[in-house]
Image (tube, rainbow, N blue to C red; front, top):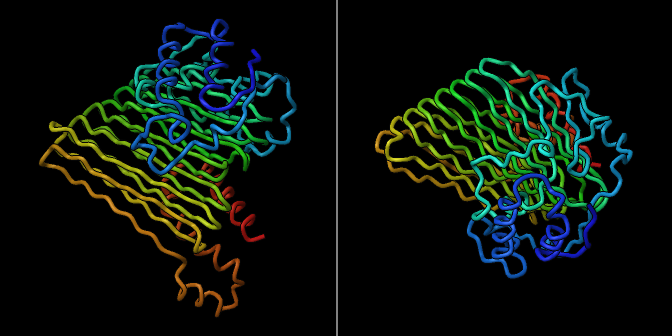
Length: 419
């Protein structure tokens, strides 16, 4: 499946033209997505129309890059795979967007997108250019279906990028009534590549999905993820994203609370250094009564890093008794670091409890002096204060083993900055 290596939207379209007859699923779906991508291009680049949702994030560097197709299906990724936490749980490993069965231990209910394509019903390729790009070029992905009442345990979903490829995994999670599943999604790699995954999660009544994402891509990589969750009556989508790696990264989450007493947690943290750009964008739609949403997103930035937070809570007219909370906090460790934050509320019901807020600051000089005066070295004192700042976000992860993995990742990030 080789295609010409050219740049920008034209390069992706040329790749689609070369691969069209070999890609799984109905070509009409892909053709419609390709037309939408042709009309809109990459946000903030080329002739792409200005999109308010991408106001703070330009994909010009993506347009300027040249992405090929991975040509070694048996590439040795043992060094990267060694960084994946060892757990006695099923694991699905994707290398450059394709499942590596020899590296995986798949659970029951797992189907490859390549064998049974399912584009779902929640995404809108005509509105979102990255969803259009994914729909156009998706080759593989994880399709997980649990029966009513089934407990799927923990699944590690690992993506490894190599070389200079672009890949667009398409993941689908469908939980029957009362089913439970924890997905630990880990992204890492080496080189300059584009990882553009789209994930749909459908939660039936009283189902519970815990979705934890650790994004630790290569420093030169681009990570542009879209997650769509539909949460039925009494169901819970419990999401957390820790963003560490990548040159430009964007996590875009959409949660639709489609039944009474549905719950969504969209928590996360972005740790950015150097010239990294991290964008955390979310939309929670309360469509039915008595829904609950919670969102706490922390940002720690040093060097010339730039962080973005865009969060919106939408409450429909009939969604009375909604309880929505949203908070974004940023800790700037350098005078050159920057944060753009835009929390929003759009409320059409009159019996709700909704709040949002944002704070930006630096390490407290008095707290730092207190620790230093008691013999704590400067780097360790700063680490203590940063960990305390992040504690509220990390405590949202209930699974102790997974929270320990995130703690280790945070500690490793700070040690790299302090070195």
